[in-house]
Every structure is written in C-alpha cells, then in structure tokens.
Length: 81
Image (tube, rainbow, N blue to C red; front, side, top):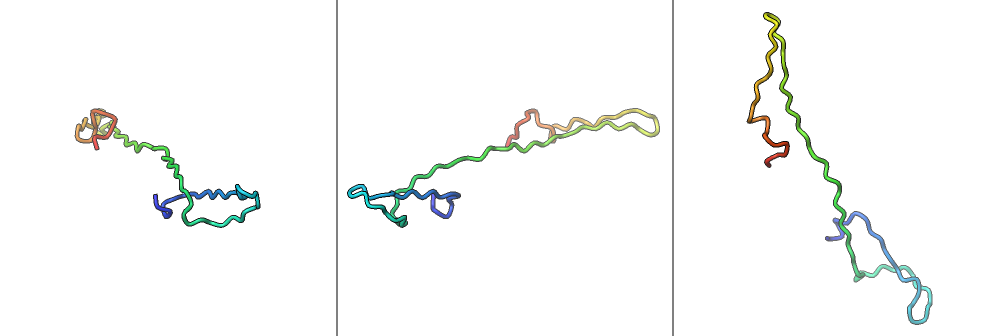
C-alpha cells in the first residue's frame, strides 16, 4: 500500500555499524526496506428486525395481527444482497 494509506509507521534503525561498531545516527533512508501488516477490523452485522404488530379494535375488541408480507420478511435471516 502507498504510504498515504498506512495507519502506523514503526521505524527501525541500526544502533551501530556492523563493521566497526561505531554508533550510528537515526537518519531516514528513502530506500528503506518496507514490510506491511494488514489487520482487518471486526465485522459488525447490520440487523433489521421486522415486527408484525397486533392491534385490538376499539369497536368490537377483536385483535388483528399485521399480515405476513413475504416482500418484507425474508425466508432467510441473511440478506440476499
């Protein structure tokens, strides 16, 4: 991924010369070897609940439930996309 899309950078510098062991300054190398680790965030499902309500008639006191609507209530709990 390009640097603009990287979230966190960890810069590692050698502490000393591997030939004479002189301390080395932390000077950025434009051609540094790059290694990237990509972590995918947890997926949170989007859940829709369809509720069929029952209502009592004020006139005759009969309780009526909303009709089952196959266009709004899927046969599967998973979205068909």
